[in-house]
Image (cartoon, rainbow, N blue to C red; front, side, top):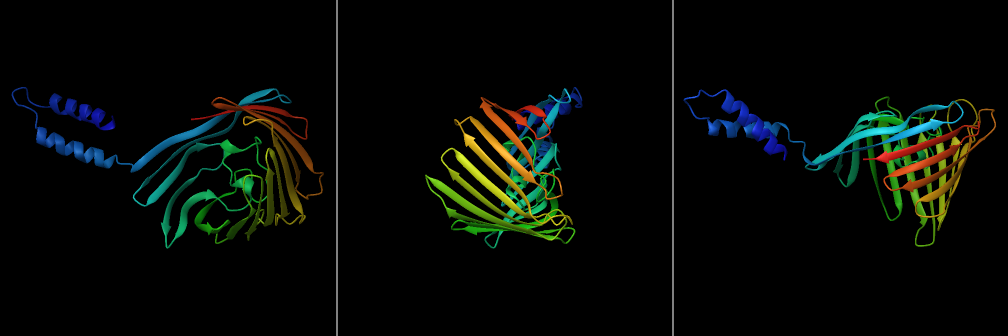
Length: 284
């Protein structure tokens, strides 16, 4: 379809500029078309996607937009690419490739810290992230990352442009149709990244996760996040989250009820400060 439209456009220009007593130079036209289509070659499988969330805060009585992102991704040969055209968090822009049996990522992407910061905004159960092991922007950074794994183990090692090092290691202790347990350990040599230990347990509709560690922010050294969720059906689930930043303040408790309704997902989130947030996120 793209080539047909371009052909019609170039043909119109070519005919309109040709002398009335002369026929169009079809060989020259073919040459120009080939050059034009080659210059617009984005590789194989170019995909445009994203999501948008409309929100309402009952405490401030404000309407707004929450999680939002427009992305473009695809590949060319043995290389892949992903770009965030617009987003509610920092932009992603990176290329991927495989060399020596190792997967490589180069550009701006999520730093390999805790699972909550490696989760896409469109897949999050809660409408916001906890700020442990990164920041509210998903802990994105610029640099080079190597990753791999086998037999239930996984690893990611990253070196940033600021010469700071982060890494994440995961292991599936048990997996199957019943109970599943996985553990992860993250280490980072930079402020507010710190060292983190995670455990994730699931059994049928029940899911539990714990993240504990040191955020290296100069404050406490036993920050934690505990999340419990229950799936009532394939489309309705309830989650409870307790967050302790170990900054001298009390731990906070948030609850979120989500419902997938066709192409959209509704979220009702009750925060510790009595804010009730309502959001509807739709992917495209």
